[in-house]
Length: 193
Image (cartoon, rainbow, N blue to C red; front, top):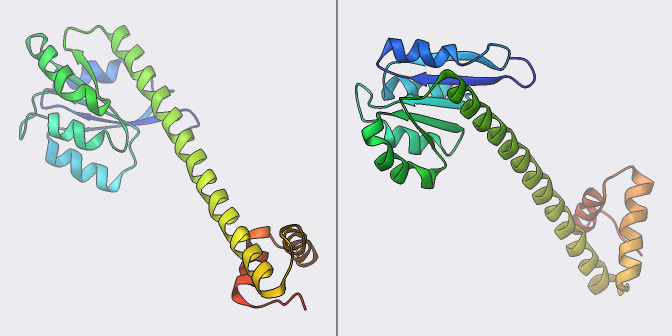
């Protein structure tokens, strides 16, 4: 998979629909494209293969497909294709899960544009998740440093400013991150005596 390409899983019992969906996916943007015929196969594939986008052609052979769409929406972008007479009911049921629902009366151009929206949304979500992890790590490091400063204030009678400078100097002198220097203080490995 090249940068910018999104892996896709098509779940459809209808081979003609599967070919139509594939025809809207240029390989330069959507690769690899996996295809399965039912929800059970889709779940097995998802356990062993990283997928960015799932396209479900409802109904499936072994279940309707709405539950599969809801379950998958937690980990990747999901698009569901439904018959025109079921469109409103499907939108009502799936929209709260972030599932994009299209009528089977869709053109290849509309399908491609919708896939691009899902791909862009998937990328944005992944970036937000990475940012959230970075922020969480920074908060943990800050918490460690603050705990170490409290220990230095209580144990060694330092001021807040002195304890802060002590941890910074300990980190700099030993080539450590502030959080690692704070861990040393908390573990009792250093003394400011």
